[in-house]
Length: 180
Image (tube, rainbow, N blue to C red; front, top):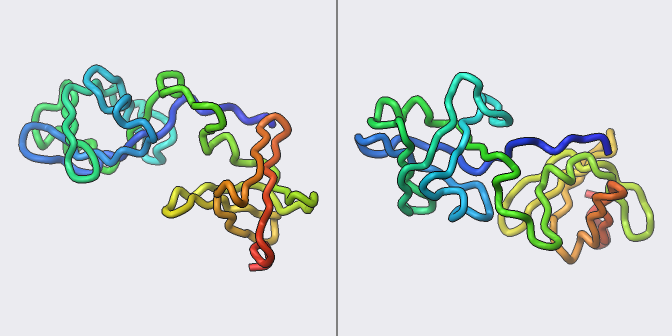
């Protein structure tokens, strides 16, 4: 396929400073938050696009974590007050991919399916995966053939197989889904 796996993946968003002691409210963006938001874990602050670590900011070491609403209040070594914490708000947190929890059998990272060809069980070419939207109740694959885009729910009932080796996603769409 010719695509390189990224070295870092987004694991959270630094939503806002909390209190006066440098804590930050973090939205976790990972399936394994307990392994990411733990004392001693090293995280990187993303650049403005959130894809790579910001070269002007040092990595952050998690000092303390406590659950708060639907996220965490996190203290990092070296961030001791609200003013310092506010410098990091709005940024994404990244973690080196090798340090993430290993994937279980059948699991994959969404970046792995970007660019894959999408075909139906009957062999009809639908297009290429151009984006993955993480939504509820189902994540969506945006598939484009260059002229139009369709959204395919990433559900076991529709996505028959993801074959990373051959670079193909095989779908079994209900009648009418590809005509929208």
